Image: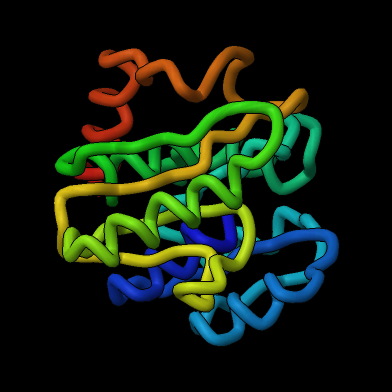
Length: 179
């Protein structure tokens, strides 16, 4: 979520978020990206209402902020849906999946593409030494991303590697455009 927040902020959007605790290097990355993070989850974090809420994969439906979001008219997307909508839909997505080594492999793939002059975008779960960040927005056609899985999930169980159901993507696109 921190990488997505930084990417959205770099696109000129005002980004805020909430979490129970922030650790380094994430706290510094978010601060450098001008992302304001509120400690703790509360319905009051949704006031004033944002134009769009992006719900992280580790959030469960009994989270007080998530419950308030569901009771509100605020449009929301999952992290994968937001990535698709804002960054992936027009790119060639290169996802690294597996049990071990995803962060390293993703950062290495982005480095190789960058060294080859392809100017890739990247989202990775750690700080990539070559880029000094957990994300990179490039102008090239490639987007290298670290796949991930969670045993808790707000939206649905199943692989994030599989494509989002088209009807669900289209539904959320309409909700975003209507605001």
